[in-house]
Length: 154
Image (tube, rainbow, N blue to C red; front, top):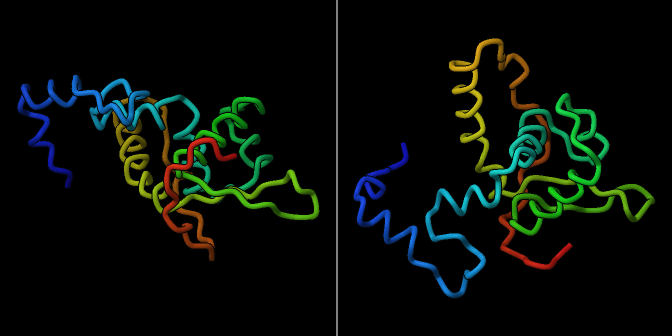
């Protein structure tokens, strides 16, 4: 269980939110919630991770057939952002140099529990939702080693 005691002290929370780290000036604040949402808080990133972790999707065309119907330009942008954040690694497959295989890093896989909890919350609080399909697809591949923050790579 996560310890949220540090969030209960309003003065500490205010300090976290207002204390800008000069080396990370592109952050809105140093609040871990805000920083996490800056990486995974759009409406597509969590769904891409869901597809990778629970359904074993790894290739661009596999993500496109998800029921949410992500557009190709959005998918391209999200995969690049996820790679830069160290959530996924890409490697070429086949004979075409532009075809990439995406795998979750250890950092990306660590979001599975959070995604599972979001699913539980949705099932309990939003009528008509179902988690019947949410079973971890068994693969022989293990998550890739933790990737560091590599800004500008792509």
